[in-house]
Length: 469
Image 1 (cartoon, rainbow, N blue to C red):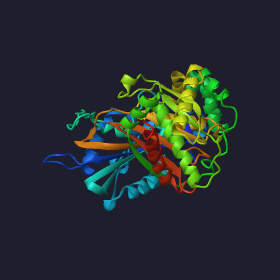
Image 2 (spheres, rainbow, N blue to C red):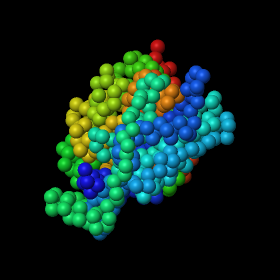
Image 3 (cartoon, rainbow, N blue to C red):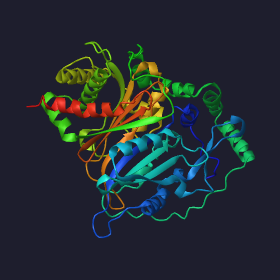
Image 4 (cartoon, helix red, strand yellow):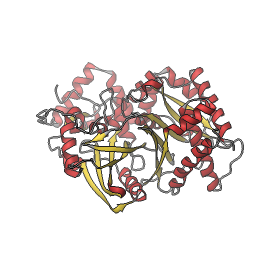
């Protein structure tokens, strides 16, 4: 394939246009590992470099960078990075031993605040050594522009295996194709424009007017998305979750047990996702009260919630069957059981009325694919006006068995979902091997108390458990 033929879609390039110093457009994650067991048990920076080097052939995109076309005659193209340097992308950091979780969260906030270097392939992975109890962490960052269809794979997934023995990946003998010249880029753009005249209009919309026009055009083609927006035309309520955000981030974590959600569901009905939303609603209620905010019986927080529509027996599989809903979280209701019943009723009503963004429409809008489901929420958040919702809550079912990186078992994994303009925090959660792990990506100034919100999540779930006989 010619280097000129791999052009970014109008939607993917829109996320390069949408990116500003205050809204970095990458999705990420934080995973905590214990060292490999046995006599040869160790995992260091060299081991991570070797592992990524062996696996990167599975996704060529990770050795490619974006080249812009002179005069913006067409969307930019992916080209091989002739100076690709694996050690630039695979990085090393350390906490003062014994590193605490507080120190890890602070590091995650700082790492995720920085935009990716557009002159290189748009991803980074960090090994964080020195975590307490002999553990280590891995932090990842991948730009939305790379999440471009069914072939998209997050860098963290490349390094994971279902067993302690790493799977073998043959060396692809990669040799970078020469980068196109400025003239090559122009000729390729003109040729593509002749073959696909509508691409010119897409490029003008994305580059000259505003990237949001591209997202809106994509959204407008999907009837499911139109119906969802129509159902939520009323503005979102005022909330302390919304403010003008800066460039810096804080990061919060909450670890919970999946069995606890199942116990609550069994006692009160609904779905596990309903229990998650009731937990978040209770946490936001307590958090607002700790801030001295006004909380009345009618107080609500509107969440945009991507929902997996996979069958429950497929919960351990990765797939792109997702819908998105706008849901009012009843934070003014003091009873945890009543909150849960209200949310179960609302979620059921959304699905029965067809007001969900259909899975296929979601794919049409986001171009997302497994396992970067969290990025779908951020893409939707960027496309919809911030006046429609207060917070994004993503719940991604993960595998219910242990995964390993070069023999080191992954103990916990937390998503990092980017925040859109005006959004003080995003709430992402991933279930994995019996746990449910919340990652709270927050604006540093708007949410100095993000750790309080994380603690409120654990307390809110405990409050629901107290209602189970």
